[in-house]
Image (cartoon, rainbow, N blue to C red):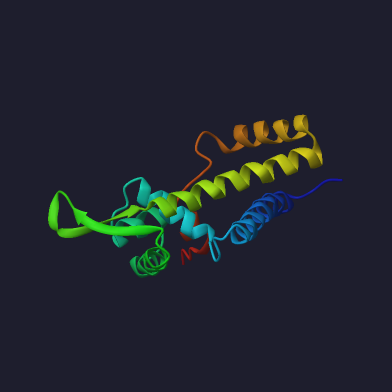
Length: 156
């Protein structure tokens, strides 16, 4: 059966969506309700130096207002904290809390478990081949923190 390029894109998106939806469901079962993929992207961006709403918005390709809303949710849940900036006493910066790190770590563990389930489903060698081929096609940097903004971007 010959598939179109659009079919391939939808299959890849469907695989991503299935993994992410399953991970979100399992995170909720483990006590982390209402985790969204954008929360993980945001915490990773904050962990790598996005210390303000402006910087987080730039890194995630979303508006400063969208970044500020995400920050509010993460602060409310205790996954990030604001602290004094050691370089500028007038500013506050963001950091991921131990609880936020636990959310991210639990998510990583769940993704490993989901990968193992896929391995059982299609076979070790088939999954290894799929990963190898996707790595070859996608390149060295398959993960971008700007995915939330990229998906919803309107370039018109």
